[in-house]
Image (cartoon, rainbow, N blue to C red; front, side):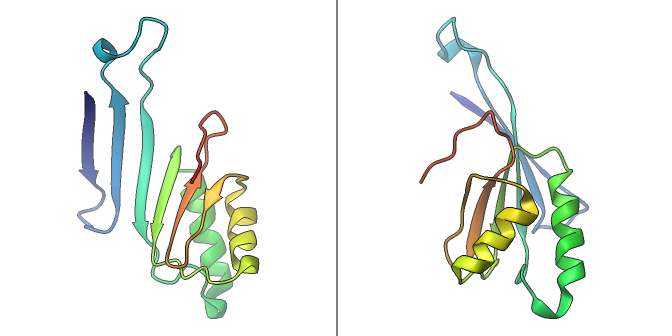
Length: 114
């Protein structure tokens, strides 16, 4: 059984933080329950060339919000170069960037695969 607790930040329906943890009664005794902080944001074209300083500041802000995983909607990361730029700015080596969204692992202890 999983426990999901969702909170809306600043009454904005696009900014949702979800805290997910596993119920310890369903895990084997050798596994511990560890909460994972997941942030989900609608970025509205994250890589706007006309506002690179805003993009950099926003990514910096997101990196330091104690999220383990970020899900980003409306990123429009079309090219390989834009995906590399996002990985560099998020300082992550594990991410998934389809055309219109992204999943970024900010916790090196977690394994993210597609």
